[in-house]
Length: 152
Image (cartoon, rainbow, N blue to C red; front, side, top):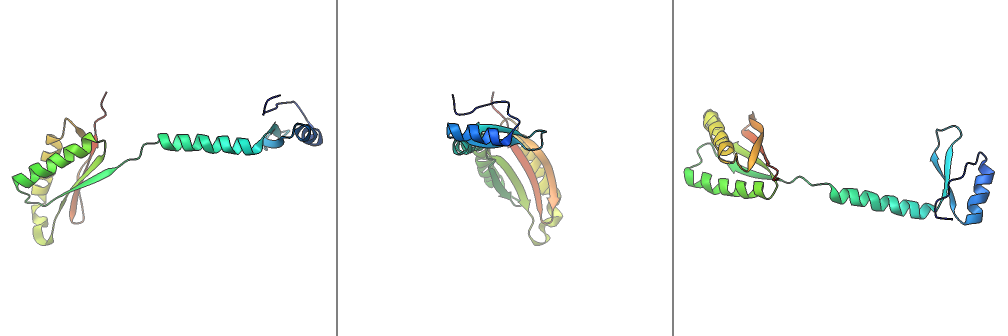
């Protein structure tokens, strides 16, 4: 017989005897069923296979990387272009982008300029990323999230 044995047994002692004869373990599969469902198998091998499956699923899961780019409310054109190139590279590499304008001291009065700056960035990066969250003011920061566009 193979490693796993399925036999209709309604007696625990009989099941244990069969498992003992085969040198395998009697494993309870569904304890809430009436009668409880058990299977004769190699328990250590079962645990090993289960860990292997979990590891394979974990390795297939994608990890989301978030890159940040920080602007000031009065970021000049050259700095903007420089940071835009970095943002484009991050999105092409598949990372999400968190762009934010940080307002120091009384510069919070320029929050409309900060929003214009972030919307301009979103428009410039439209071919490589889509806006996930529009600019939103949180304390002294105005934050916007951009996700990469999946390539077909």
